[in-house]
Structures are given as structure tokens and as C-alpha cells.
Length: 231
Ligand SMILES: Cc1cc2nc3c(=O)[nH]c(=O)nc-3n(C[C@H](O)[C@H](O)[C@H](O)COP(=O)(O)OP(=O)(O)OC[C@H]3O[C@@H](n4cnc5c(N)ncnc54)[C@H](O)[C@@H]3O)c2cc1C
Image (cartoon, rainbow, N blue to C red):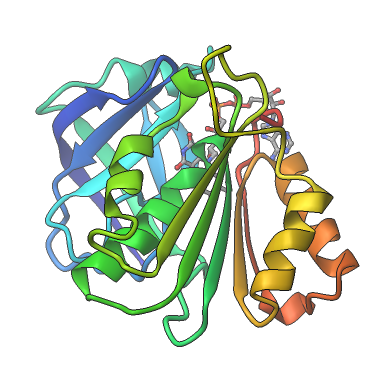
């Protein structure tokens, strides 16, 4: 654990409702994919997953917009501003020797992005299935980028997008990450490690669905992003 003040290197809008910041990595700061840190802005603190792989030079964080004082401070950051961080913390680690099924709800993509970038940078051969649920196309963060990795860069990565309120032109899967989808995933890879991140309701319901079709609790890794409604 380390507490440090560091600087914003750059920022980028990721979607209609999300924004990235990249921070200089404090000297000596190391972490495992995908741990979290506590970010403090203007006296307000929130836990955040590190969205960039541990092998990358800077630390990326992606936040979904809200009206809270913390988010107002986050969305007004620009290059050169100072941010306090403390960490890393958490035990949401990739187990590369076992197949991975990642279930991300909305901004819950951030720890999965870190795990997948780690797999890219380390040339891991772990079979990974990413199921990524969002409300609509405008909310998807890192969608085109992860699609481009699947097959081409990571031969064993499969990505399945599912939207609850897609636009009329959407040809992909529609609906939530529900028990029927969970059952299909478990039938294909019963021995996987299941990584879940997103709004608490999504994580809790998906956990119940996994346990309901016989997955053992020891196969589950959970990250609950408090403060968000279900997608
Ligand atoms: C390990 C971890 C990693 C995370 N990574 C990310 C990330 O990468 N990106 C990201 O955007 N967010 C992430 N979060 C969530 C983040 O910490 C904030 O909670 C979230 O962004 C909402 O903050 P806010 O300031 O917008 O809303 P807040 O003002 O914190 O809360 C919004 C609503 O949630 C309710 N609420 C707040 N705290 C709780 C609580 N503990 N239990 C129940 N209800 C509560 C409030 O009453 C309010 O209605 C992560 C959380 C955890 C635990």
C-alpha cells in the first residue's frame, strides 16, 4: 500500500457518459491486474479499479458521470492537475492457468480491461470470454478496441455484447446478463473462473445465477461498484 500525490497526464471522453484520466505512475507503485485504488479529489474519495494493464506506463481510470461532488471534480480534471491516490488494494486477480469468463455491467468493464491488457502484454494464452452488458450503444466504453483484440491479438478472446435498450439498427444480443445467458456460458466452460464487476444488483443477481447452475463459490471473483443502478 502506498499513498501518493500524482499528476494527470491527459484526459479523454470515452462515451456520452464516461471519461478517462491517465495519471503518472508514482515511483515504486506496482499492482496486480486488476486491483483498485482510492482516488481523492477536492477532499472526496472513491475506490476505482485501475483500467490499464500493469505493464502500461501510466494509470488509467474511467468514470461514469453523476452529479456528485467527486464526479464533478473528476470531470473537470485536465492535464497537470494533482490527484491523491492510495493503494493498491483488492484480490481481483487474473488466474492465467484457468479459462476466464468475464461478466461486466457498464463501467464494470474497467477491471476487465486491465486483465485483458495484461493478457495482451504478457502474451497469455488464457481462453477469455468477455460478456459486456450496457444500456445502449452510446454507453459502451472500450467496445471497438476490445472487439479488435478478439481473434487478431488474443486468439482465445471472445467478446459478446448485450444491450438492454439498443437502437433500431442493433443486430447483436439484446437483454441483460440474465440466468439463461449465464447457463449457456457455464455449459460451455464449467471449470472457468468467473469475474463479475458492475452495479451491485447486476453482480449479486449474476452471482446467484452462477451458483444456481452449479458453479462453486470458489470459482467466483466479485467487484461491486456501489453507487450505480443496474444497466
Ligand atoms: C473496487 C471498486 C472499483 C470501482 N471502480 C470504478 C471504476 O472504474 N469506474 C467508476 O466509475 N466507478 C467505480 N467504482 C464505483 C465508485 O467508487 C463510485 O462508487 C461510483 O462511481 C459512484 O460514485 P458517485 O460519486 O458518482 O456517486 P455517489 O455519490 O457515491 O453515490 C451515488 C448513489 O449511490 C448511493 N451509494 C453510495 N455509496 C453506497 C454504498 N456504499 N452502498 C449503497 N449505496 C451507495 C448513494 O446513496 C447515491 O444514491 C468502483 C467501486 C469499487 C468498490
